[in-house]
Length: 118
Image 1 (cartoon, rainbow, N blue to C red):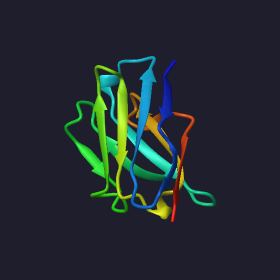
Image 2: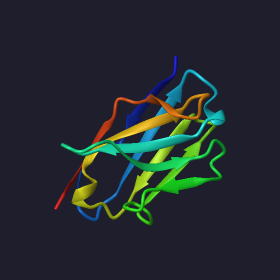
Image 3: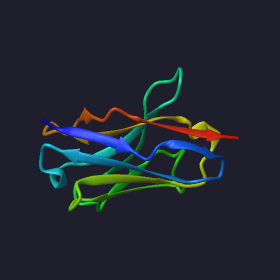
């Protein structure tokens, strides 16, 4: 059974930084792409960033490009999201997601709250 556990969320002032972590277990972590998504109150869940299985390819939403960095440590079965220059509009619950064999994001963590105050 695949498990994804996020950590690192919290309250930060605008312009500050946070680093989210997602620890994976239950399968060969290094074989699958991973992603981060977020959902703000009253809005649909949206894509934030993704990283290929080896870490060589990364993808970002336009809204976070240049401010967020996704990375992974396959030896630790962990994916990270470094968030800099945070804005109030980044406030959301952030979810870690893992691809399945069908190459869709079928595995999800429980989410971690990020709140950016102005």
